[in-house]
Length: 116
View (cartoon, rainbow, N blue to C red):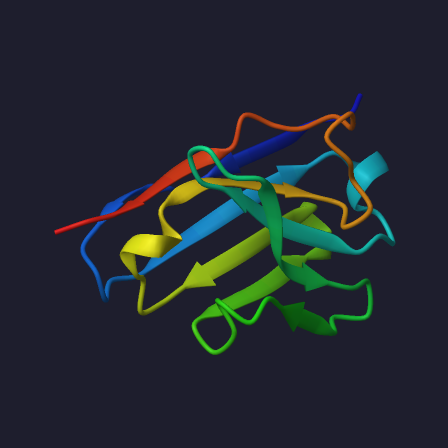
């Protein structure tokens, strides 16, 4: 059964840090690249970080140098360490394969709010 469960979001002050987790079912996770997306109110869902099955990573320019994506293959889990958070990072964060579309299965996401 396909399943994606995101967690770890919350309210944090500018400059703070959060670590997001995504538990994925094996059918999605195994041998596949995985990514973190975010969607702010009134905006499209954007891909911000990708990790390939070999561990190589890539980032959107807006988060490069501040966010780090990682994976634990034994736990079918993907992480997103977010540092130096800014108010513009406020969004609902989702994980999925980088080839996912809006018609794909999505989890419930986790809300990140950066505010003083």
